Length: 53
Image (spheres, one colour):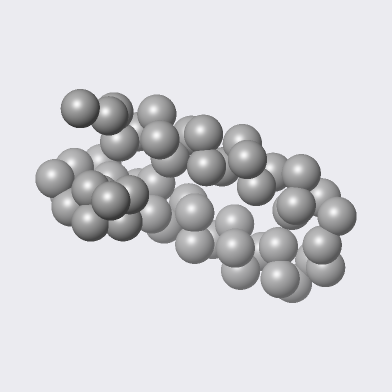
């Protein structure tokens, strides 16, 4: 079984270089999405597998 928090950390690291090179507004939208998904995983740890399946 994969660790959902580790999976999210890896996804954030994978996209971090894209945040630097893309437009500021678009980066902010994507960053908010990943942070929201990250905190959602703590509130509903069983639900994260829906997104990572």
